[in-house]
Image 1 (cartoon, each protein chain N blue to C red):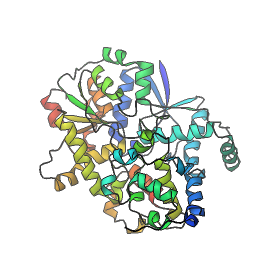
Image 2 (image 1 turned 60 degrees about the horizontal axis):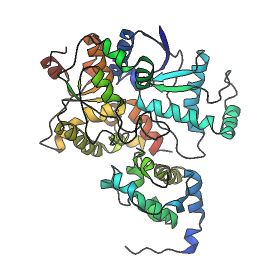
Image 3 (image 1 turned 90 degrees about the vertical axis):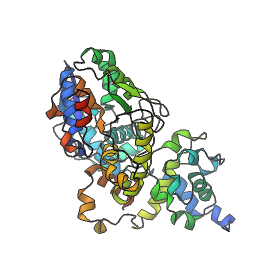
Image 4 (image 1 turned 135 degrees about the horizontal axis):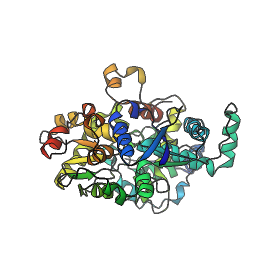
Length: 135
Length: 293
Protein backbone atom coordinates (compact mmCIF):
# COMPACT_ATOMS: atom_id res chain seq x y z
CA UNK A 1 0.00 0.00 0.00
CA UNK A 2 1.37 3.40 -0.99
CA UNK A 3 0.78 6.09 1.61
CA UNK A 4 1.36 9.77 1.05
CA UNK A 5 2.48 11.80 4.00
CA UNK A 6 2.81 15.55 4.11
CA UNK A 7 3.63 18.33 6.54
CA UNK A 8 0.17 19.71 5.94
CA UNK A 9 -1.49 16.52 7.16
CA UNK A 10 0.81 16.21 10.16
CA UNK A 11 -0.02 19.77 11.26
CA UNK A 12 -3.71 19.42 10.52
CA UNK A 13 -6.61 20.11 12.86
CA UNK A 14 -7.35 16.41 12.79
CA UNK A 15 -4.18 15.47 14.71
CA UNK A 16 -4.89 18.22 17.22
CA UNK A 17 -8.48 17.09 17.61
CA UNK A 18 -7.49 13.48 18.29
CA UNK A 19 -4.95 14.65 20.88
CA UNK A 20 -7.57 16.84 22.54
CA UNK A 21 -10.37 14.29 22.60
CA UNK A 22 -8.12 11.50 23.82
CA UNK A 23 -5.99 13.63 26.13
CA UNK A 24 -2.91 11.86 24.75
CA UNK A 25 0.33 13.11 23.23
CA UNK A 26 0.67 11.01 20.10
CA UNK A 27 4.36 11.71 19.50
CA UNK A 28 5.29 10.00 22.75
CA UNK A 29 4.79 6.65 20.99
CA UNK A 30 8.03 5.04 19.79
CA UNK A 31 6.35 2.13 18.00
CA UNK A 32 7.45 -0.75 20.20
CA UNK A 33 4.32 -2.70 19.22
CA UNK A 34 3.49 -3.97 22.69
CA UNK A 35 -0.12 -2.78 22.36
CA UNK A 36 -0.65 -4.84 19.22
CA UNK A 37 1.15 -7.86 20.68
CA UNK A 38 -1.30 -8.08 23.58
CA UNK A 39 -4.52 -6.92 21.92
CA UNK A 40 -7.16 -9.69 21.92
CA UNK A 41 -8.89 -8.13 18.90
CA UNK A 42 -6.00 -7.90 16.42
CA UNK A 43 -7.19 -10.87 14.39
CA UNK A 44 -10.18 -8.78 13.30
CA UNK A 45 -8.27 -5.52 12.78
CA UNK A 46 -7.14 -4.00 9.50
CA UNK A 47 -4.85 -1.40 11.12
CA UNK A 48 -3.11 -2.67 14.27
CA UNK A 49 -3.19 -0.56 17.47
CA UNK A 50 0.44 0.62 17.14
CA UNK A 51 -0.26 1.50 13.50
CA UNK A 52 -3.34 3.47 14.57
CA UNK A 53 -1.07 5.64 16.70
CA UNK A 54 1.45 6.03 13.86
CA UNK A 55 -1.30 6.92 11.36
CA UNK A 56 -2.68 9.43 13.87
CA UNK A 57 0.76 11.03 14.31
CA UNK A 58 0.88 11.47 10.54
CA UNK A 59 -2.67 12.78 10.27
CA UNK A 60 -3.90 10.01 7.96
CA UNK A 61 -7.51 10.90 8.59
CA UNK A 62 -9.24 9.02 5.80
CA UNK A 63 -7.49 5.72 6.48
CA UNK A 64 -8.21 5.97 10.19
CA UNK A 65 -11.86 6.90 9.89
CA UNK A 66 -12.48 4.09 7.39
CA UNK A 67 -10.72 1.54 9.57
CA UNK A 68 -12.52 -1.52 10.92
CA UNK A 69 -10.23 -1.56 13.93
CA UNK A 70 -11.84 1.35 15.76
CA UNK A 71 -15.13 -0.61 15.92
CA UNK A 72 -13.50 -3.89 16.86
CA UNK A 73 -11.73 -2.39 19.89
CA UNK A 74 -13.88 -3.09 22.96
CA UNK A 75 -11.94 -0.77 25.33
CA UNK A 76 -10.54 -3.67 27.35
CA UNK A 77 -7.51 -1.51 28.33
CA UNK A 78 -4.94 -4.28 27.90
CA UNK A 79 -2.90 -1.93 25.66
CA UNK A 80 -3.22 0.92 28.15
CA UNK A 81 -1.82 -1.05 31.08
CA UNK A 82 1.08 -2.40 29.00
CA UNK A 83 2.24 0.71 27.14
CA UNK A 84 5.77 1.51 28.38
CA UNK A 85 5.22 5.17 27.52
CA UNK A 86 1.88 5.41 29.33
CA UNK A 87 -0.15 6.21 26.22
CA UNK A 88 -3.82 5.40 26.54
CA UNK A 89 -4.42 3.74 23.19
CA UNK A 90 -8.03 2.92 24.06
CA UNK A 91 -8.65 6.65 24.50
CA UNK A 92 -7.23 7.32 21.03
CA UNK A 93 -9.58 4.67 19.59
CA UNK A 94 -12.47 6.40 21.37
CA UNK A 95 -11.45 9.78 19.97
CA UNK A 96 -11.52 8.33 16.44
CA UNK A 97 -14.96 6.83 17.00
CA UNK A 98 -16.15 10.12 18.45
CA UNK A 99 -15.07 12.06 15.36
CA UNK A 100 -17.48 9.92 13.32
CA UNK A 101 -20.25 9.62 15.91
CA UNK A 102 -20.36 13.39 16.38
CA UNK A 103 -21.20 13.64 12.70
CA UNK A 104 -24.02 11.17 13.24
CA UNK A 105 -22.20 8.38 11.44
CA UNK A 106 -23.51 5.60 13.67
CA UNK A 107 -21.76 2.27 13.54
CA UNK A 108 -24.75 0.30 14.80
CA UNK A 109 -28.10 1.27 13.33
CA UNK A 110 -30.59 0.56 16.07
CA UNK A 111 -33.71 0.41 13.83
CA UNK A 112 -32.04 -2.31 11.78
CA UNK A 113 -31.57 -4.64 14.73
CA UNK A 114 -34.21 -7.36 14.79
CA UNK A 115 -36.43 -7.89 17.84
CA UNK A 116 -34.71 -11.23 18.32
CA UNK A 117 -31.30 -9.54 18.42
CA UNK A 118 -32.54 -7.03 20.96
CA UNK A 119 -34.45 -9.44 23.19
CA UNK A 120 -31.77 -12.13 23.24
CA UNK A 121 -29.11 -9.99 24.94
CA UNK A 122 -29.17 -8.41 28.44
CA UNK A 123 -29.72 -4.69 29.06
CA UNK A 124 -26.05 -4.23 29.95
CA UNK A 125 -25.04 -5.35 26.43
CA UNK A 126 -27.50 -3.08 24.63
CA UNK A 127 -26.74 0.01 26.69
CA UNK A 128 -22.97 -0.33 26.37
CA UNK A 129 -23.17 -1.14 22.67
CA UNK A 130 -25.33 1.90 21.94
CA UNK A 131 -23.16 4.11 24.14
CA UNK A 132 -20.08 3.10 22.17
CA UNK A 133 -21.47 2.72 18.66
CA UNK A 134 -24.24 5.28 18.27
CA UNK A 135 -24.34 9.04 18.55
CA UNK B 1 -23.47 -6.11 62.35
CA UNK B 2 -21.68 -4.72 59.31
CA UNK B 3 -23.88 -2.51 57.17
CA UNK B 4 -23.33 -1.79 53.48
CA UNK B 5 -25.10 0.39 50.98
CA UNK B 6 -25.74 -1.48 47.74
CA UNK B 7 -26.12 -0.29 44.15
CA UNK B 8 -27.50 -3.11 41.96
CA UNK B 9 -27.52 -1.73 38.40
CA UNK B 10 -29.82 -2.75 35.56
CA UNK B 11 -28.88 -6.33 34.75
CA UNK B 12 -28.74 -7.57 38.35
CA UNK B 13 -32.51 -7.24 38.47
CA UNK B 14 -33.11 -9.27 35.32
CA UNK B 15 -30.67 -11.54 33.45
CA UNK B 16 -28.24 -11.59 36.37
CA UNK B 17 -30.78 -12.18 39.14
CA UNK B 18 -28.77 -15.32 39.92
CA UNK B 19 -25.80 -13.04 40.70
CA UNK B 20 -27.84 -10.80 42.99
CA UNK B 21 -29.77 -13.52 44.83
CA UNK B 22 -26.68 -15.62 45.49
CA UNK B 23 -24.69 -12.58 46.66
CA UNK B 24 -27.43 -11.40 49.02
CA UNK B 25 -27.89 -14.88 50.47
CA UNK B 26 -24.13 -15.24 51.00
CA UNK B 27 -23.85 -11.84 52.66
CA UNK B 28 -26.71 -12.74 54.99
CA UNK B 29 -24.86 -15.90 55.98
CA UNK B 30 -21.75 -13.78 56.60
CA UNK B 31 -23.71 -11.43 58.84
CA UNK B 32 -23.73 -8.38 56.60
CA UNK B 33 -26.75 -6.10 56.50
CA UNK B 34 -27.16 -5.03 52.85
CA UNK B 35 -29.25 -1.96 52.17
CA UNK B 36 -30.16 -1.31 48.57
CA UNK B 37 -30.26 2.36 47.61
CA UNK B 38 -33.87 3.57 47.70
CA UNK B 39 -33.53 5.22 44.30
CA UNK B 40 -31.01 4.52 41.59
CA UNK B 41 -30.60 4.67 37.82
CA UNK B 42 -28.39 3.01 35.22
CA UNK B 43 -24.72 3.99 35.67
CA UNK B 44 -24.21 4.24 31.91
CA UNK B 45 -22.39 0.86 31.80
CA UNK B 46 -19.23 2.27 30.19
CA UNK B 47 -17.00 5.15 31.25
CA UNK B 48 -16.79 7.91 28.64
CA UNK B 49 -13.21 8.16 27.47
CA UNK B 50 -13.43 11.42 25.53
CA UNK B 51 -11.98 14.26 27.59
CA UNK B 52 -14.82 16.70 26.89
CA UNK B 53 -17.72 14.29 27.38
CA UNK B 54 -19.06 15.29 30.78
CA UNK B 55 -22.70 14.66 29.92
CA UNK B 56 -22.29 10.91 30.03
CA UNK B 57 -20.85 11.04 33.56
CA UNK B 58 -24.09 12.43 34.93
CA UNK B 59 -25.89 9.11 35.27
CA UNK B 60 -23.13 7.83 37.52
CA UNK B 61 -22.90 11.06 39.50
CA UNK B 62 -26.63 10.98 40.23
CA UNK B 63 -26.19 7.52 41.73
CA UNK B 64 -23.29 8.73 43.86
CA UNK B 65 -25.51 11.57 45.11
CA UNK B 66 -28.13 8.96 46.03
CA UNK B 67 -25.45 7.26 48.14
CA UNK B 68 -24.83 10.48 50.05
CA UNK B 69 -28.57 10.94 50.51
CA UNK B 70 -28.59 7.53 52.19
CA UNK B 71 -26.30 9.07 54.86
CA UNK B 72 -23.29 6.98 53.97
CA UNK B 73 -19.99 7.57 52.20
CA UNK B 74 -19.44 4.26 50.50
CA UNK B 75 -21.34 2.02 48.12
CA UNK B 76 -20.93 -1.60 47.08
CA UNK B 77 -21.52 -2.97 43.59
CA UNK B 78 -21.61 -6.54 42.30
CA UNK B 79 -21.37 -5.85 38.58
CA UNK B 80 -17.83 -5.26 37.31
CA UNK B 81 -19.02 -2.71 34.75
CA UNK B 82 -20.97 -0.68 37.30
CA UNK B 83 -17.98 -0.82 39.62
CA UNK B 84 -15.61 0.43 36.95
CA UNK B 85 -17.89 3.19 35.67
CA UNK B 86 -18.96 4.55 39.06
CA UNK B 87 -15.43 4.44 40.43
CA UNK B 88 -13.84 6.12 37.41
CA UNK B 89 -16.43 8.87 37.34
CA UNK B 90 -15.88 9.43 41.06
CA UNK B 91 -12.09 9.65 40.57
CA UNK B 92 -12.45 11.98 37.59
CA UNK B 93 -14.61 14.39 39.55
CA UNK B 94 -12.36 14.27 42.59
CA UNK B 95 -9.32 15.33 40.60
CA UNK B 96 -10.94 17.80 38.22
CA UNK B 97 -12.50 20.84 39.93
CA UNK B 98 -13.31 22.52 36.63
CA UNK B 99 -15.50 19.63 35.48
CA UNK B 100 -17.07 19.42 38.91
CA UNK B 101 -18.13 23.04 38.75
CA UNK B 102 -19.69 22.60 35.30
CA UNK B 103 -21.55 19.52 36.45
CA UNK B 104 -22.86 21.27 39.56
CA UNK B 105 -24.22 24.08 37.44
CA UNK B 106 -26.01 21.56 35.25
CA UNK B 107 -27.47 19.59 38.15
CA UNK B 108 -28.71 22.53 40.17
CA UNK B 109 -31.89 20.66 41.10
CA UNK B 110 -29.95 18.11 43.17
CA UNK B 111 -30.16 18.90 46.89
CA UNK B 112 -26.93 17.28 48.01
CA UNK B 113 -23.59 18.65 46.94
CA UNK B 114 -21.23 16.06 45.59
CA UNK B 115 -17.44 16.40 45.54
CA UNK B 116 -16.22 13.03 44.40
CA UNK B 117 -16.34 11.95 48.02
CA UNK B 118 -18.03 8.55 47.77
CA UNK B 119 -16.03 5.37 48.12
CA UNK B 120 -17.00 2.90 45.38
CA UNK B 121 -16.24 -0.70 46.27
CA UNK B 122 -16.76 -4.05 44.68
CA UNK B 123 -18.12 -6.96 46.73
CA UNK B 124 -14.80 -8.78 46.29
CA UNK B 125 -12.95 -5.95 48.06
CA UNK B 126 -15.41 -6.09 50.92
CA UNK B 127 -14.93 -9.85 51.23
CA UNK B 128 -11.13 -9.62 51.10
CA UNK B 129 -10.47 -6.47 53.12
CA UNK B 130 -13.34 -6.18 55.63
CA UNK B 131 -14.74 -9.65 56.21
CA UNK B 132 -11.47 -11.40 55.23
CA UNK B 133 -11.20 -14.70 53.42
CA UNK B 134 -10.04 -16.63 56.51
CA UNK B 135 -13.27 -15.71 58.30
CA UNK B 136 -15.30 -16.77 55.27
CA UNK B 137 -13.48 -20.11 55.34
CA UNK B 138 -14.70 -20.63 58.92
CA UNK B 139 -18.32 -20.27 57.79
CA UNK B 140 -18.13 -22.88 55.05
CA UNK B 141 -20.81 -25.51 55.62
CA UNK B 142 -20.33 -27.51 52.46
CA UNK B 143 -16.75 -27.95 51.33
CA UNK B 144 -16.25 -27.68 47.58
CA UNK B 145 -13.04 -29.71 47.68
CA UNK B 146 -13.75 -31.70 44.57
CA UNK B 147 -14.76 -28.72 42.40
CA UNK B 148 -12.14 -27.37 39.99
CA UNK B 149 -12.83 -23.70 39.36
CA UNK B 150 -11.05 -21.44 36.87
CA UNK B 151 -11.63 -17.80 37.81
CA UNK B 152 -12.16 -15.43 34.91
CA UNK B 153 -11.52 -11.77 35.75
CA UNK B 154 -12.13 -10.15 32.38
CA UNK B 155 -11.25 -6.48 32.00
CA UNK B 156 -13.01 -4.11 34.30
CA UNK B 157 -12.16 -5.47 37.74
CA UNK B 158 -8.46 -5.10 37.08
CA UNK B 159 -8.04 -2.40 34.45
CA UNK B 160 -7.11 0.41 34.30
CA UNK B 161 -4.49 0.04 37.04
CA UNK B 162 -5.72 2.98 39.16
CA UNK B 163 -9.22 1.48 39.32
CA UNK B 164 -8.50 -2.23 39.64
CA UNK B 165 -8.07 -3.81 43.06
CA UNK B 166 -5.64 -6.51 42.10
CA UNK B 167 -2.61 -7.05 39.86
CA UNK B 168 -3.78 -6.20 36.30
CA UNK B 169 -1.64 -8.93 34.73
CA UNK B 170 -1.95 -11.68 37.31
CA UNK B 171 -4.95 -11.16 39.60
CA UNK B 172 -5.52 -13.74 42.35
CA UNK B 173 -8.42 -12.39 44.39
CA UNK B 174 -11.07 -14.73 42.95
CA UNK B 175 -8.70 -17.71 43.12
CA UNK B 176 -7.94 -16.90 46.78
CA UNK B 177 -11.66 -16.74 47.53
CA UNK B 178 -12.25 -20.07 45.78
CA UNK B 179 -9.43 -21.63 47.81
CA UNK B 180 -10.92 -20.22 51.03
CA UNK B 181 -14.24 -21.83 50.09
CA UNK B 182 -12.49 -25.15 49.71
CA UNK B 183 -12.58 -25.39 45.91
CA UNK B 184 -9.54 -26.17 43.78
CA UNK B 185 -8.49 -22.95 42.04
CA UNK B 186 -7.28 -23.50 38.48
CA UNK B 187 -5.01 -20.87 36.96
CA UNK B 188 -5.25 -20.29 33.21
CA UNK B 189 -3.63 -17.88 30.77
CA UNK B 190 -6.87 -16.36 29.41
CA UNK B 191 -8.16 -15.16 32.79
CA UNK B 192 -7.89 -11.45 31.94
CA UNK B 193 -8.50 -11.72 28.18
CA UNK B 194 -11.50 -9.64 27.03
CA UNK B 195 -14.63 -11.65 26.15
CA UNK B 196 -15.61 -9.10 23.50
CA UNK B 197 -18.09 -7.31 25.78
CA UNK B 198 -20.81 -5.34 23.97
CA UNK B 199 -19.69 -6.57 20.56
CA UNK B 200 -22.11 -9.38 21.41
CA UNK B 201 -24.96 -7.26 20.01
CA UNK B 202 -23.66 -6.67 16.48
CA UNK B 203 -20.77 -9.14 16.13
CA UNK B 204 -21.73 -12.32 18.02
CA UNK B 205 -19.26 -14.31 15.88
CA UNK B 206 -16.39 -12.48 17.61
CA UNK B 207 -17.76 -13.54 20.99
CA UNK B 208 -17.99 -17.16 19.83
CA UNK B 209 -14.30 -17.05 18.93
CA UNK B 210 -13.28 -15.54 22.27
CA UNK B 211 -15.53 -17.88 24.24
CA UNK B 212 -13.91 -20.79 22.43
CA UNK B 213 -10.36 -19.63 23.28
CA UNK B 214 -11.13 -18.68 26.88
CA UNK B 215 -13.11 -21.80 27.82
CA UNK B 216 -10.87 -24.22 25.92
CA UNK B 217 -7.87 -22.81 27.75
CA UNK B 218 -9.65 -23.21 31.12
CA UNK B 219 -10.66 -26.78 30.27
CA UNK B 220 -7.14 -27.67 29.16
CA UNK B 221 -5.88 -26.58 32.57
CA UNK B 222 -8.36 -28.97 34.19
CA UNK B 223 -11.28 -26.66 35.07
CA UNK B 224 -14.81 -28.00 35.42
CA UNK B 225 -16.51 -24.61 35.81
CA UNK B 226 -15.53 -21.00 35.17
CA UNK B 227 -16.32 -18.37 37.82
CA UNK B 228 -17.18 -14.82 36.68
CA UNK B 229 -18.01 -11.48 38.27
CA UNK B 230 -19.55 -9.52 35.40
CA UNK B 231 -23.05 -10.01 33.94
CA UNK B 232 -21.82 -9.26 30.42
CA UNK B 233 -18.93 -11.74 30.66
CA UNK B 234 -21.42 -14.24 32.09
CA UNK B 235 -23.79 -13.77 29.17
CA UNK B 236 -21.02 -14.03 26.60
CA UNK B 237 -19.25 -17.02 28.11
CA UNK B 238 -22.47 -18.88 28.94
CA UNK B 239 -25.19 -18.03 26.40
CA UNK B 240 -22.84 -17.56 23.46
CA UNK B 241 -21.72 -21.18 23.88
CA UNK B 242 -24.63 -21.85 21.54
CA UNK B 243 -22.86 -20.00 18.70
CA UNK B 244 -19.50 -21.38 19.84
CA UNK B 245 -20.76 -24.95 19.46
CA UNK B 246 -22.10 -24.17 15.98
CA UNK B 247 -18.75 -22.70 14.92
CA UNK B 248 -16.41 -25.22 16.54
CA UNK B 249 -17.69 -28.79 16.33
CA UNK B 250 -15.17 -30.17 18.85
CA UNK B 251 -16.04 -27.55 21.49
CA UNK B 252 -17.34 -28.99 24.74
CA UNK B 253 -19.82 -26.94 26.74
CA UNK B 254 -18.87 -25.83 30.21
CA UNK B 255 -20.99 -24.36 33.03
CA UNK B 256 -20.37 -20.72 33.95
CA UNK B 257 -21.14 -19.63 37.51
CA UNK B 258 -20.97 -16.30 39.28
CA UNK B 259 -18.42 -16.46 42.08
CA UNK B 260 -21.29 -15.62 44.42
CA UNK B 261 -23.19 -18.76 43.38
CA UNK B 262 -20.17 -20.87 44.29
CA UNK B 263 -19.85 -19.00 47.59
CA UNK B 264 -23.59 -19.42 48.27
CA UNK B 265 -23.32 -23.21 47.79
CA UNK B 266 -20.39 -23.36 50.22
CA UNK B 267 -22.17 -21.20 52.80
CA UNK B 268 -25.26 -23.41 52.71
CA UNK B 269 -27.74 -21.27 50.74
CA UNK B 270 -30.70 -23.04 49.18
CA UNK B 271 -31.04 -23.87 45.50
CA UNK B 272 -33.76 -21.25 45.06
CA UNK B 273 -31.10 -18.58 45.65
CA UNK B 274 -28.90 -19.92 42.86
CA UNK B 275 -31.43 -19.43 40.02
CA UNK B 276 -30.01 -22.02 37.63
CA UNK B 277 -33.02 -21.38 35.37
CA UNK B 278 -31.18 -18.30 34.05
CA UNK B 279 -28.24 -20.30 32.69
CA UNK B 280 -27.79 -21.55 29.14
CA UNK B 281 -25.41 -24.38 30.09
CA UNK B 282 -27.07 -26.07 33.05
CA UNK B 283 -24.60 -26.35 35.95
CA UNK B 284 -26.86 -28.79 37.87
CA UNK B 285 -25.64 -32.13 36.44
CA UNK B 286 -22.03 -31.34 37.42
CA UNK B 287 -22.97 -29.97 40.86
CA UNK B 288 -25.22 -32.97 41.54
CA UNK B 289 -22.49 -35.35 40.48
CA UNK B 290 -20.16 -33.61 42.94
CA UNK B 291 -22.79 -33.85 45.69
CA UNK B 292 -22.93 -30.06 46.05
CA UNK B 293 -26.66 -29.57 45.48
